[in-house]
Amino acid sequence: MDLQQGDAVPGDAGRPASAAVLIATCVSALVVNANTSAVSILLPAISEDTGTSLDTLQWAITGYSLVGAAVIVTAGALGDVFGRRLVFLGGLGLFIASCVLIALSTGGGGVIAGRAVQGAAGATILACGMSLLSVSTSGAGRVRAVTLWGGASAVGAAAGPLVGGVLVDGTGWQGLFWIDAAIALACVPVTLKGVAESRDPERSRSIDFAGTVLIAAVLAPALLALSEGAQWGWTSAAVLGCFALTLAAGVAFVVVERRVEAPLVDMRLLKDRVLIGATIAILLSAGVINGLMYLVSLYFQNPATLALSPLEAGLATLPATVGLILVTPLVPRAVQRLGIGPVIALGFAAATGGCVMLVFVQGDWRYAAFVLPLVLLAVGLGLVNGPASSASTSSVSADDVGAASGISNMARYIGAAAFTAAVATVNATVGASRSSAGEAAADALAAGLSGACLLLAIASAAGMVLCILAVRARRHRAGPGAYGAAAAAHAHTVPLESR
Image 1 (tube, rainbow, N blue to C red):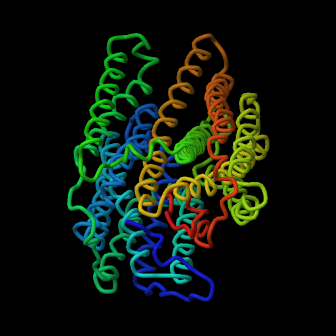
Image 2: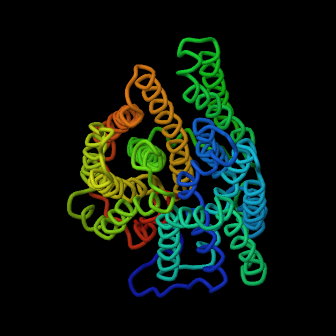
């Protein structure tokens, strides 16, 4: 769907969103993002309660992103064809069910399965929620609505670790999921009563279910190989078989996408140099921030290192959140003065600096030593997210904005899944190797974190080079809606541009 129609123009007050639409979409976006960002803080408590290792529970993070990557474009297409309100309600129902499943689980398998379901639910809520906002507003009213949606998403992402820590101490880790289920349930009657149904009559009724399945088939064996490669052996038949399955599924995906009427990924757009560069930047930035937050959440709570409580670990992430919030309003002005490419490069440079500082972590480091690297990384990726999201949609024609946004959103989920799996493997492998060599527990854990941060530093440095692909967009002047949801760019690419 083309969300450019109705963009703000000077003097156009537009059509504002109704209270019901704002409440349903913004509250649900807040809950989804808070839930997503809180889970890493909960993992040690879940591990202790269920007897499941942290290495296994890593799939609660990667499984969520894997399913989200496969579902997010399809969810939007289903909303366009069968009704956005109907599919949005389906996402809420699925989210409630997943929360209940996780909260009632006594083993790690139930938590991981529930999180996979939650990945589909969260992607559906975000995709259809944005569609509901776009069709119910126009002009300046749309900009205000999207800005509020973006702010709600950012608040949720920022508050998630802190809320998760409070609830672990007060109600147990299950409390987060019961509360999230209750809030999502409260959004249902609001949506039924106050949100009008809408469809896109011009869209093909063809849904690319084959592409959805094949995306999952590409990612699942690759992530399994990344997660288990160190234990199985990187040249073992199991790992090579996983990569062979990924390759076969990738070839099948390309064949299917070239033939279906309404493809999940329009292969024609992959010839656009700016779109590809921006999408890779989005993938790398999402991967780096998700991978690092997973690592530090566990490192901060480990008894051998900082031994923080879940609440203290949640509070410990606040400097990164503050850095992201402070830099967001500065991004549009920086883009207008320097251009998109240089701003993305500057952002990746800052993120690289933060990761490099953490490469030198030692077992006796106290929390204060982590503050500057976390702030540098958050500020850097804050500089990347908005411009990359803008470039990914502004580089294509009006008719292709929705398809380009879908590609970028998929990349965001893929980056989160792949990097979390990769850094978890490096962290565990290096830590176990140092521990077996007789090093103290704190030093072994620090070595594992150092190795994983080296991987993230390399990825961020690669982003500096790849940002050259976005240079053609550097003179583009973003419209008033382009950064309305920049604070939420970590969660969703908003295809709202004025050209």
